[in-house]
Length: 115
Image (cartoon, rainbow, N blue to C red; front, side):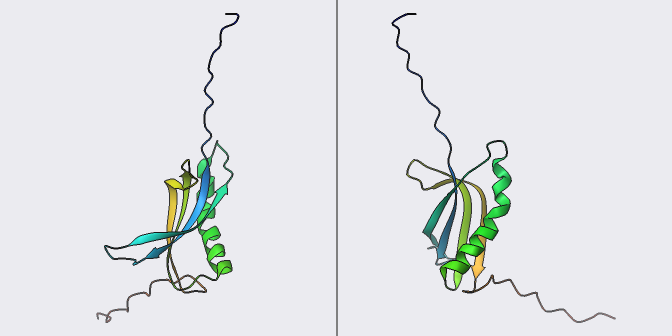
Protein backbone atom coordinates (compact mmCIF):
# COMPACT_ATOMS: atom_id res chain seq x y z
CA UNK A 1 0.00 0.00 0.00
CA UNK A 2 1.09 3.56 -0.51
CA UNK A 3 2.95 5.04 2.44
CA UNK A 4 3.53 1.60 3.99
CA UNK A 5 7.03 0.83 5.20
CA UNK A 6 8.27 -2.72 5.08
CA UNK A 7 11.47 -3.97 6.67
CA UNK A 8 13.41 -6.17 4.27
CA UNK A 9 15.95 -8.31 6.05
CA UNK A 10 19.06 -8.93 4.00
CA UNK A 11 20.50 -12.39 4.13
CA UNK A 12 24.00 -12.39 5.58
CA UNK A 13 26.57 -13.92 3.28
CA UNK A 14 28.47 -16.92 4.65
CA UNK A 15 32.21 -16.30 4.64
CA UNK A 16 34.82 -19.05 4.29
CA UNK A 17 38.48 -19.25 5.21
CA UNK A 18 41.57 -21.38 5.55
CA UNK A 19 43.15 -21.30 9.00
CA UNK A 20 46.36 -22.70 10.45
CA UNK A 21 47.01 -23.54 14.09
CA UNK A 22 49.89 -25.03 16.00
CA UNK A 23 48.77 -27.96 18.15
CA UNK A 24 50.21 -27.44 21.63
CA UNK A 25 50.72 -30.49 23.86
CA UNK A 26 49.60 -32.74 21.00
CA UNK A 27 48.21 -36.10 22.01
CA UNK A 28 47.66 -35.18 25.67
CA UNK A 29 44.52 -34.31 27.59
CA UNK A 30 45.88 -30.73 27.75
CA UNK A 31 46.01 -30.36 23.93
CA UNK A 32 44.96 -26.98 22.56
CA UNK A 33 45.31 -25.03 19.30
CA UNK A 34 47.22 -21.77 18.96
CA UNK A 35 45.63 -20.00 15.97
CA UNK A 36 48.44 -18.69 13.75
CA UNK A 37 46.39 -17.12 10.99
CA UNK A 38 43.19 -16.99 8.97
CA UNK A 39 42.92 -16.36 5.23
CA UNK A 40 39.48 -15.57 3.82
CA UNK A 41 38.86 -17.41 0.56
CA UNK A 42 36.30 -16.67 -2.15
CA UNK A 43 33.88 -19.52 -2.69
CA UNK A 44 31.79 -20.48 -5.68
CA UNK A 45 28.41 -20.96 -3.98
CA UNK A 46 27.48 -23.70 -6.41
CA UNK A 47 30.45 -25.85 -5.35
CA UNK A 48 31.79 -24.74 -1.94
CA UNK A 49 33.63 -28.05 -1.43
CA UNK A 50 35.90 -27.30 -4.39
CA UNK A 51 38.41 -25.65 -2.04
CA UNK A 52 38.87 -28.80 0.05
CA UNK A 53 41.57 -30.02 -2.35
CA UNK A 54 43.50 -26.77 -1.96
CA UNK A 55 43.71 -26.81 1.85
CA UNK A 56 46.74 -29.10 2.27
CA UNK A 57 48.87 -27.43 -0.46
CA UNK A 58 48.06 -24.03 1.07
CA UNK A 59 48.97 -25.20 4.57
CA UNK A 60 52.27 -26.75 3.43
CA UNK A 61 53.23 -23.64 1.47
CA UNK A 62 52.36 -21.48 4.49
CA UNK A 63 54.45 -23.64 6.82
CA UNK A 64 57.41 -23.62 4.43
CA UNK A 65 57.27 -19.87 3.78
CA UNK A 66 56.68 -18.95 7.42
CA UNK A 67 59.68 -20.71 8.89
CA UNK A 68 57.54 -22.67 11.33
CA UNK A 69 59.44 -25.13 13.51
CA UNK A 70 59.02 -28.77 14.39
CA UNK A 71 55.58 -29.76 15.61
CA UNK A 72 52.03 -30.73 14.80
CA UNK A 73 49.85 -28.25 12.95
CA UNK A 74 46.15 -28.19 12.16
CA UNK A 75 44.83 -26.70 8.93
CA UNK A 76 41.11 -26.11 8.49
CA UNK A 77 38.76 -24.94 5.74
CA UNK A 78 35.70 -23.56 7.52
CA UNK A 79 33.03 -20.92 7.71
CA UNK A 80 33.77 -17.81 9.76
CA UNK A 81 31.76 -16.51 12.68
CA UNK A 82 30.81 -12.85 13.16
CA UNK A 83 34.27 -12.13 14.66
CA UNK A 84 36.10 -13.65 11.65
CA UNK A 85 37.14 -16.67 13.72
CA UNK A 86 36.93 -20.23 12.29
CA UNK A 87 33.50 -21.70 12.95
CA UNK A 88 32.10 -24.78 11.21
CA UNK A 89 34.76 -27.04 9.68
CA UNK A 90 34.26 -28.25 6.12
CA UNK A 91 37.65 -29.99 5.78
CA UNK A 92 40.71 -30.31 7.98
CA UNK A 93 44.22 -31.73 8.02
CA UNK A 94 46.68 -32.66 10.77
CA UNK A 95 50.24 -32.05 9.61
CA UNK A 96 53.35 -33.24 11.40
CA UNK A 97 56.07 -30.79 10.35
CA UNK A 98 59.85 -31.21 10.69
CA UNK A 99 60.57 -27.53 10.23
CA UNK A 100 61.27 -28.01 6.53
CA UNK A 101 59.03 -30.87 5.35
CA UNK A 102 56.14 -33.13 6.27
CA UNK A 103 57.00 -36.00 8.58
CA UNK A 104 55.56 -39.33 7.51
CA UNK A 105 55.17 -42.31 9.82
CA UNK A 106 57.84 -44.96 9.40
CA UNK A 107 56.62 -48.23 8.01
CA UNK A 108 56.70 -51.04 10.53
CA UNK A 109 59.63 -53.39 10.05
CA UNK A 110 58.89 -56.41 7.94
CA UNK A 111 58.34 -59.54 10.01
CA UNK A 112 60.28 -62.75 9.45
CA UNK A 113 59.44 -64.55 6.25
CA UNK A 114 57.49 -67.73 6.87
CA UNK A 115 58.59 -70.71 4.77
